[in-house]
Length: 473
Image 1 (cartoon, rainbow, N blue to C red):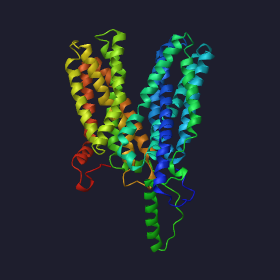
Image 2 (spheres, rainbow, N blue to C red):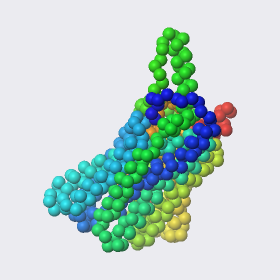
Image 3 (cartoon, rainbow, N blue to C red):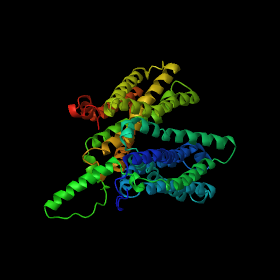
Image 4 (cartoon, one colour):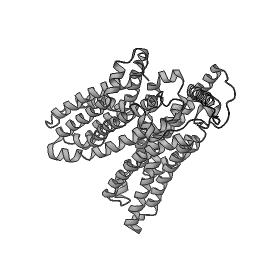
């Protein structure tokens, strides 16, 4: 938010509102496309892992190391990039992330074209891991920074009232990007083209979208639109100016809100709880996403197991929309809706724990269960890193005085990714030592722990003070 220029009058509120609403579709389109491109470029590598190993000559150990390094830098990148998005021009950070992601994929293609493995295996491995180290940081711009830009533009009372639905639709970008990557790879391989085209196409698409992103105005104020948040900040500044004047101290002109610190972000009520709760929910999602085909392979052939497991991913897409709509319907009581969804998920996990070792699992029942579980997991995961983060950054303690949405989203995303990555390490040993029932019980414990962390917020939403009972902020 660039607030170094003076305000040009108060303007007409109706005209301000009209201009704000007129620009919102473009802001939605560009930020949606940016995160779509991030997942398009992120997923494309996993779709050609087999060719990367068999044709390019890279080992399975390297492929595993690439995933580990990416997860580590992606987690750290969320925390860092969220802060950068609040400190500098958000669209610049988004564009750098897209350009960097495209450049990383091009460098991987260069390693394939020049056959680095044939030249020197150690050099090839170090080169690829170094590129993927950077790739994780570039990929981590879309979530926190894109959410911040969305929060800047969808700040009017009408948008806030429907924030859950708006962000629910917006979070479909990741699934559409993943699906597009799979379709792109299928098209490339089906045409008989070299597999590296599946990396080059998203690389070029990311770089082209970066130039479109540069055309996006990150904040309404930069177009002369005075939003309620700006009015709140100006009111706070004028009150502070008057108070200091009475003490004989003259304040400099208002330079606009400064980026919030990590410590102050954690001090916002419920940010820390949501960050760690999201880690437990994200862990449940990761286990289901990565291990379902393996688990189902006990009773079905590989093709059938993967097809059945895909229903979980399909269910995740409408999950965010459903949670967003229901929470908007109940006045923004998102913690209550998330807690209800998690309680229902525990029931499904308990069913898996009961019957996972018996081998008697009807495919039709499995399809229905996994579709429902996708909704139950995907909805809370999507809404916590979008609408909930926007709610938290609008808390009265920071509203109008600091920029916090990117930092808050980054902290929730980053802490969640770290918690989930550490928790994943327990799945293999648990399954090997005690069977699959122990894994489902582990997920029940994780889901219950995440829900418990939100307990105070759930209580506050169920029994709010009389003066705030209509809408929960």
